[in-house]
Length: 217
Image (tube, rainbow, N blue to C red; front, side):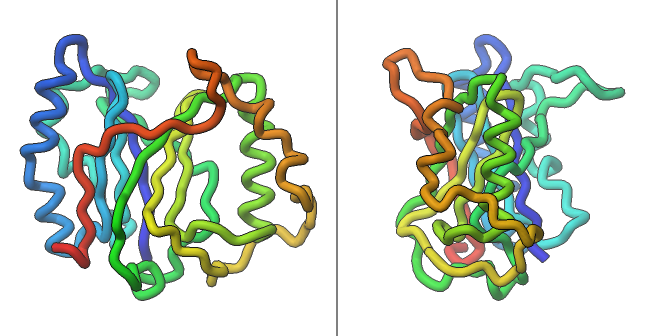
């Protein structure tokens, strides 16, 4: 069983540079990849945001234990009994999902791992999830095996690998309906996204801090 988990953190004012340096220099995540606790682990940054992506080999693994040393650099999030330095992001879309360790192991070298972000219009968040869950579980069409998109508030963070691997999912879809538009452009995703300052819609790339994979270690 492979559990994919994603997190968002915010650097404290004035702590972005020191926090990124601490994340670059830590070796705990890489060691856990070497030990097979994580299949893949990656970190990305954009402005005062930092994002973590983990593929945990066991359901009970708490990936945040590997980055505890970053807590002094991060703001606390309210909303639960105890403040949190990391917010779990909600998986809102993937074309494929792990069926087993063997299924999820990369069959060819990965040339590049990437992170990207976009912002939804808040009034369109429910519609975005509706269309994407429908596409995902109807298996309406196949695309990037390892792509995943997560959400916190109206911010979307996506993880990708290149070259892309396109294959039919092994895990059956959870819907028997056929509501996904035959032409995906009819879903009007262009109306869902909040434009960037330069007018661009959709996702923009963010900086990679590290990316480790068990097959490379």
